[in-house]
Length: 140
Image 1 (spheres, one colour):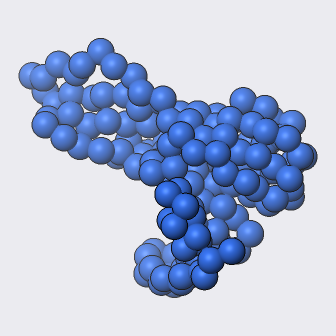
Image 2 (cartoon, helix red, strand yellow; image 1 turned 90 degrees about the horizontal axis):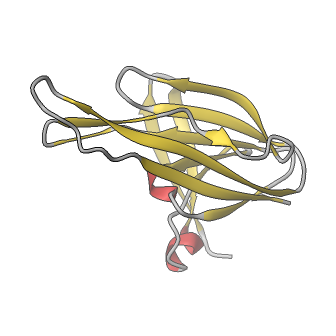
């Protein structure tokens, strides 16, 4: 196991310490943050398979993007197997961001998905495209 890097972030909630596993980067994986027993996944984790500990929480934080007169927004993430990864909370925001928290309830594998949709500026038309964000969580 590689070294752990610590970074600090100041926000509305105050000081937050975030541990990022350097070994994940070395193995070509997108590192995901762990906050006090809670794994945090973001847009960059799309397509990944990640381990989680039974009894822990998995938080998903998806952020909107804006490009060429379009805002791409997210639906609330959903677990495909609530027995493995139970829903604790979710929220969508006017900005287009979406969050969810799941509890790793029992050993097994569950996928979490969310959809990214386009919202056009006035006078623009969006491409008819819906993208899916997907992560596979292996609870041990």
